[in-house]
Length: 297
Image (cartoon, rainbow, N blue to C red; front, top):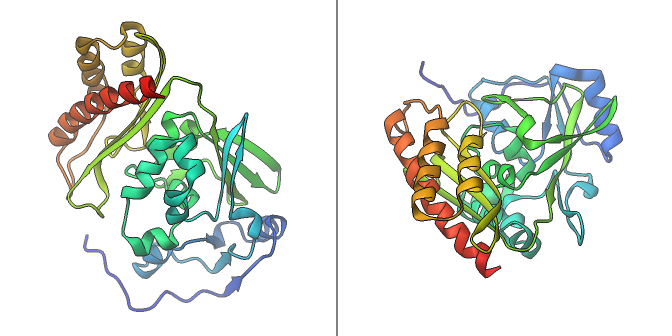
C-alpha cells in the first residue's frame, strides 16, 4: 500500500496546553482515545499528515516545566523528564557519566533538526522496534514512571512494550519520566548500530552492559533493536557470558546465542538473513568493547 502524505494536517477539534501533569491527566481521562499528547511531535505530526492518525484533540505538554529536566541522584541514578529533547540528552554530562551507551545512541540518531525537537520519552512511547534509545535503556534495567487517573505506577522498560507501536499505556496515562539506575563500579556500557545512512532508522542495533570482577562476569545484559516485533533482551545469550566469562570463545558463543534469539523480518531496509548476521557481529563487537570499558572504569 502506498503511503500518502498531505500538505496539511487533518482537522482536529481542540488544542489544549495544560500547565500541570494533573491537568493533563484530567484531559486524558475525559477524552481517552480521542486525544494525543504533543511533546516534540516529530512522529505524531508525520502520522497525522499521512492520515494514519486522526486525533480530535491535541494536548501540548510543553508548558509543564517540571517535565523538562535531567536529575541525578548519587544513589538512585538518573531521571529523564518527558520533555527532555534528544539534543539535550546528547549534550548532557549526567547521561554521559551514568549511561554512556544512551549518550552514544542520542548522538548518533536522526538529523540535527529532529534531535532539536524529538524527546527521549517520545522515542520510547513510539515503541518502534528500531528506536535507538530503547536498547541502551533496556540493557541497564531502566524503568518508566507512568501517571494516570488511577495514580502512579513504575514499569520496567522490558515490560513496557507489547507490540510494534504498542505499549502498556492506558488512554488516560502518560509517561512522566524515565528512571536510569546507578550502575555498580566495574561496569561498562556500549551501543552500536548499523543503518543505510547515518540518519536512517537502524537495521540492527545492540546495547550491552557488563559488570566485571577480574576475569569473571558479575552481570550481563544484552538488548537488540530492529530484529524482533519489539526491542528485546537476549536473555539466553546473557546467561552464556555470565557463566562462561570473557574468553574469546565465550564471546563468540554469546554472540551466536543472541543472533539465534532474534526474530527479524525482511523489509524495505534489510533482509532477515542480514539482520541475523549483523546481530551476531555487532553483539560480539559490543561485548569486547564493553569488557574494555568495564575494566577501565
